[in-house]
Amino acid sequence: MSTKNFYINRRNFLKSTTAAMALSSFGAYGLDLVYREKPLRVGLIGTGWYGKSDLFRLIQVTNVEVISLCDVDRHMLSAAAELVSTRQKSGKKPKTYTDYKKMLAQSELDIVLVGTPDHWHALQGIEAMKSGAHVYLQKPICVDVLEGEALVAASKKYNKVIQVGTQRKSTPHLIEAKKNIVDAGRLGKVSHVEMCCYYHMRDKKNRPVEPIPDFFDYDMWTGPAPMREFDGLPHRRWRAFMEYGNGIVGDMCVHMLDTVRWMLDLGWPKRISSTGGIYVQKDAKANITDTQNAIFEFEEMECVWKHRSWGTPPDPEYPWAFKIFGEKGTLSGSVMQYDFVPVGDGKKIHKDVIYEREKYPEDLTEKDIELHAAPATRGHMLDFLSAIETGSSPVANIQEGHISTASCILANMALAIQRPLTYSQGKQLILNDPEATKMLKRSYREGWQHPNS
Image (tube, rainbow, N blue to C red; front, side, top):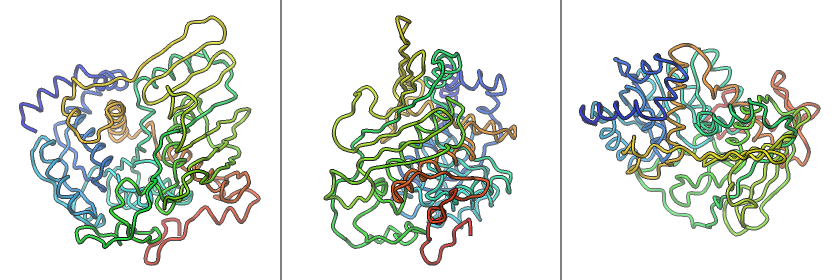
């Protein structure tokens, strides 16, 4: 980015929702976060779709120098380095690595963004903190519960900030809904919440085995996960396999459950149960459920999750959403909007997502960008920077990220074992269930060590 464009973007920033958020949340200090004199040294592990998206939002809100990038796909890595050089102020191309440990050992980074598949999050997040960096960690934070416990412990041990990428907490219209609807008492007592995802997002293909391309290190990509046969580059479609993540519950429910917990100030669920399976899309290799219900029980309240990767949504306006039912009214919320409908003849309230297309024109040409999420991620990055500077806790701190992630993992465990589960974080076990307790920690592939070992 040229100096001229940098200052144009600076002026645009002052007019943006992000600037308003910075000023309202941090006062004049918010501008210090944005216009720091010395750039933060930044590295990214995982240069795919969302890794780059997170990095570009960080570049937009503060002064950084992207020092290094890491990916096991050399084609993707090279393209990312070229793209970053056009987006950062210095115009420099970052150094590239295919081994994240080498990158962390050689780069002396202030911040590391982790945008790899889920089965890598815990190991790379811990190693980044160990190297001296603060971490922006994509959700879910882990693929088993004890990986999450290891991340929480590492954050304390190394005294590093982790901001989890559950950016609904930094979504402008949802922040408004929490303040003006929930916190204002318009819902009254809440005893039931429904959350859902009806996106057709499950891979439906049955791909043949093929040779591994020479530019892709499949062994390193697999890492601690079980080694599956290679049936094409796994980018983005890895979500279809439980070997690498926790299905649609771990991918999509984690966002909505985390949002509801934040809005209603909820901690750990008292009990978690789940039903479901592969009912319709049986021909695909994908082994995640295509249909699943989960119940997260709290004190005098239940939060119910439903997903289907087939059919139509019950409410087309809210295909991926939450609905909070109170005695005085109902709040529906999603990444695109919120609606409050009071009981009786009161005034309904509607608010749409806030876009910043004009203020950040580079968003409009960015491949695969989620325009609706860009302002939220910019706000999330500002909150992350503030926590680093002040030593405070970010809005999506690692403990909250652990609760939301672990709850979704426990829902899948409850489905697999066919009974409700209650987790004790203090004891790190499932109460009165030794069989389920053994499932809190996945087996790693030979040559890899679990961080909770």
